[in-house]
Length: 298
Image (tube, helix red, strand yellow):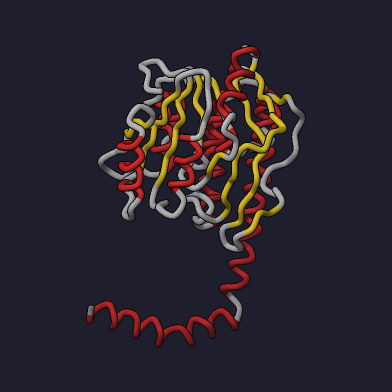
């Protein structure tokens, strides 16, 4: 499938995901298409066996995989867009290294739609949700249901697409804007919002991927820290947008997030001032002291 001008670039970023990456890569290998596509894979300097597994697949499928892994750790947001900027395709399909595809015709179905509907910029589909902690499929309580066709206005109310389900038209114009934002999360929502400037969004009913909960960089990070980064993202998007309704919806998200963070802070202050909190700190002192002594003796 190697081609200097692939129609689709599958962009896959990964970091320390040796437990999942084979299933991800197998989902790419099994794709059946009438067009050439490439897999642009970027491992962000994993400390486990992820890079070795990628190397095995690249050796086995040299015409499919293009390894653009950085030599220094970039961080998930930078790597997300770095992989896209290496893409050669007219369309980009995203799938991070812990999620995986389950339909061999996924790429074909999405390309067929975009090729025949030039007024659409993004197409996504339904997914299964796998809870890594309990090892079971669960109900999708992460995203809200939306009509078949939506727009940037709908997206400005909050994300409703799972990353491994998305394919979009490449618009290189969005990357200078993204780079001007600096470091932020979530990277996918910013990408969807900016790309939706160029067309509508279509939802396919087909279930063609599995999205893991509790295994990725984003899902395992500290909640309050994530909320602050999300607030930063929404604020920067607000400045970039020109549509009044879009700006109004983003402003609602900003207000709700600030209120939520203020509520958390008020409750944290109440907890910190309680007798139980101070008693807990007192009881933990000996254990912290022993931990410090242990580190010195290592």
